[in-house]
Length: 278
Image (cartoon, rainbow, N blue to C red; front, side, top):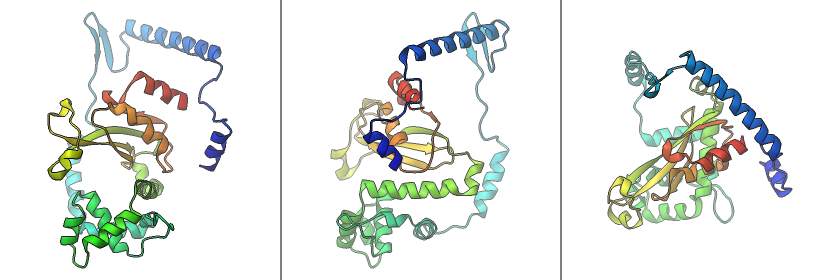
């Protein structure tokens, strides 16, 4: 992070491509010619991998299911072995393992929250969209005033971002996570939630999802199933607007080299910028 900041100040950030435009274009045209020649040869010999070229056009073989049917029995058996615990206990345990709660510092003096139970209760209220009023009513010993004060002074976008990075890094370093991936591949997609009650006035209407107001959360997730970036975005804006934000501004140690989106997350501009950034 310090090296990046220094290079940025000096305007010396390197590109992942040849900065000489003439040489770069010549290299890309040569590569394009080579790849087209290869595809043409394979198509003539009907040797394109998982695809055939006929008079009616290109036909691509559908991908097989990532999880075979026979694996479902093992999934069910494994699920039954997991103990059933309260979500509050799980939150406490995860904080004991990772210490993520220390990132929720005081806005004024940077001190950590003195009451961990109060802090985690406020976070849980956010996580399950319960709200502080109902959280206080359902939690013995807590009041709305206490939760509201702690939320105002300790819970902000930047503290959530730092705490999320702590959780992602802890999983990234865990040996078991390597069974899922090496942390260099990711994907992103949006998920819309309908706004109800008093929240309707803050929601956005998008004809794609009907006439009811709602909010869209755009999430980046690694190949280790770690959601390293989540943003509340404008429902009326194309998903591709936020793809680079999640890849460039997350605070975790993940080094993403390859990223996948659906068609809403793609534009020629984003594709070109991805190439420039490596």
